[in-house]
Length: 181
Image (cartoon, helix red, strand yellow):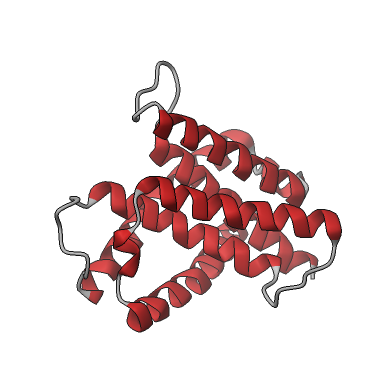
């Protein structure tokens, strides 16, 4: 793992975290009402919009691809937090708790990225951003299938690993978008 990758990763996460915490102050934890399937669908909508923008090269809504990738990062964190929280737990969580949970999920996901990045030799740097988008869409379809199977898998990783991969692919895309601009 290069120091450069660590700095770039942390820089992108700082942007995502800042927006997430600002929205938490604005809206509270209204996302707590969402079922896991709804969060997966929100991620799907964002990834599908990115793919459409990549193909059509024109946007009629004033949100760019970067904002959609940031949304995927934050929805992946929400999904992982929701899986850890009890269904009967309060819908409105204390800001400090949300901040700690966000950081915990990011740190767990970053550790996974370090391990995979070591094994794959930073292959993501040579990938097209559109391939990262396609990988996110594939992971979403996997999560939807696992959800439809009530969480049961025979030989595959569970939903958390897929959310972590989607989050990391989004961070990689954001790094590539920053360095290509």
